[in-house]
Image (cartoon, rainbow, N blue to C red):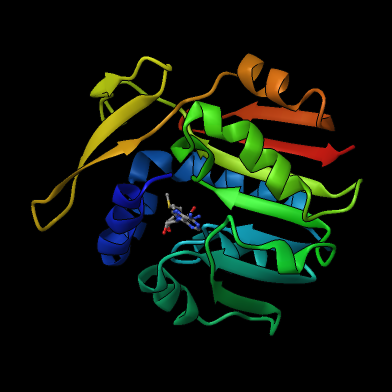
Length: 215
Ligand SMILES: C[S@@+](CC[C@H](N)C(=O)[O-])C[C@H]1O[C@@H](n2cnc3c(N)ncnc32)[C@H](O)[C@@H]1O
């Protein structure tokens, strides 16, 4: 996760949710929302990289409480401006690497569309650090994009470690190069087998959803 990617999401804040309006993705999104709500229902949730609060808004009605964090104030401002039906949402501007003060306070962790932005060799340390914030038995949920030819932004290049990168263009014409990895089920299960149990991997056409319980 580098500064280029962080700046890109700050600049993209006001146009970010257009991705959720693409007509061909609505069926998948509705199924994804229902499944995420089911898995996290009743939990106290620590959300990382919450962005504009698309998932926060949909989780608030079903969870006990949710602390939603993001490194960029530009996106949190949009998330804060939404009306939440339950008074159970708190936002904090936070780097996901700086959450240790919340250790032991939540029974679930959640991250939407953030997994794909980690370099492959960053994932083990990220998972260990994130998991350390929770007690055994806590539930973790991640969701992200599948690569769909003709729909996804094309992969521009791979680096020698196997990471894939996209060139993303914003409405102001600026172009940003971001890491965007598309994990396989095998890769994810290998990564988690020593760390988790009850691993559920689901793919839809445009998205994947991963949930598991900490050992
Ligand atoms: C693809 S967006 C996902 C937003 C939201 N979770 C969603 O699904 O709509 C990635 C988010 O990660 C945030 N981000 C990037 N690096 C971060 C970091 N080190 N700590 C916390 N948030 C970060 C960006 O600001 C951006 O809002």
